Length: 387
Image (cartoon, rainbow, N blue to C red; front, side, top):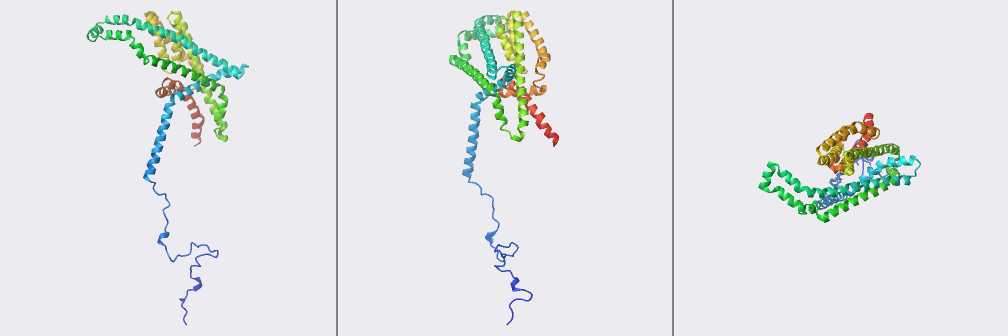
């Protein structure tokens, strides 16, 4: 009987179902497969497309959450601004606290002395500004008819007034009391403005006192958020930034104080009325970068021209000379070791800060620019040199 096995082919060597597995019973990937299952091809492991309804619902929730977050930030924007101003004031007053502590005063006593000085400045500003402003406003309203008669002496204005009765309507409007009632939105609006200003001032004072007392603990808490390997470097940079900001705020306050005192003595010498109030206005506006000194000079010089033309001209000459002395002698000597910011960065920062947050933004722009320059010089530039 013939052997069914073809010649040259060993039956034991032919792969069978049992031989496709090794001795351990595992499937041998090198073994040929006799049957190919069409359903065993590689399946698509990508996740299926989500349900359009679920996708739209989740997207709508994300947009709604972002909108609510923006609304919350906008609602709390004024309070956040007060917090930032208070923090900058605390950083600016901290050098005075450290100076008193270096002269054997305890920290609570040093903070109390500095804070009492700030309160006295606030109270003195209110006492110096509010009565003159009230008196001058009433006096201005009473003198409007006389100003109108002076304007009628001009032929062009007299012709326009005869055609449209502009001056008569202006005098009637101001004298009737509607002007005063609508200036701040009526009595209720004026009360809201006053109460809001007092509340904001008290909030700034309380927050500044809190930040002064907890300055060291706040810095340590912030440094602990940095990884341990970089904490020493972060502490050095943070202390340098705080020192620059504090130096700028303190230096700017000193320059403003010098401007106010100089203006007060000059106006007293010329017997300009409300010299203390005008000096306070000059000191406050001198804090504003770029345009602050010009605003204060215009206000004080305008009052000088109301006294007499020679007094007004003297005020203009005084402010021109004083601004040159302040820009080229006083400010460089005070700021030489506190803030090293290029003039271009100062101008750009003040313009951007003023566009974003108004006067407060212009005040905060220069110390923030100094802080960014420190980070660029100490962190960004060294990394670029190593690449």
